Image 1 (cartoon, helix red, strand yellow):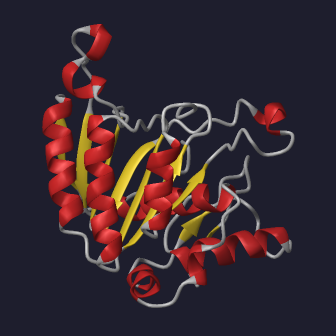
Image 2 (cartoon, rainbow, N blue to C red; image 1 turned 135 degrees about the vertical axis):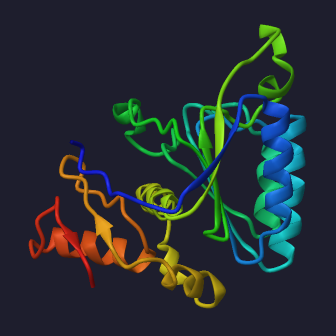
Length: 231
């Protein structure tokens, strides 16, 4: 009904406990060899946020391309300046999906990104309802926090990767094709299809080059925005 792409060969593991989720996420981050893509509505520079940061900085020093998207509303005042500086100095790229410091941003205050996605090497992904914060482990002031996160392998990762690419592009950053090397090589291994959302005119489908090419062709009027294509 919503024209979503059908994927197969997916395997999921469900987490309803934040401690289990973050333990598995940290283990998978440690295995990254090519790329780490993460975007969360709320990201805090608290205990779990610092544990994740330490792994990301270490992986960046090993040559892994690490890209993060924070939501400008959800993460407002939750990430310290020191935390951001350490990421930047280590070569970790990060962008705000809705940067409240940008001119006229107040007129787009509803453009918040509530996604919670982590993708490692294009092989493993996490998505669900958990943000990066200690309260998802110990409940914080709420006493107990019940939420759900899933670990995914299989073709569905292509869709999540395409969503991340779209959000990165929307966040006024340079394109992911600006770098050569392993990052681009890994993306070229993904299925070459993309789907463009009719309402937003933004692609939500998969490999990086396919997504950017499709968006360009839509703007040129050569493709209908709701089309599916195979380059």
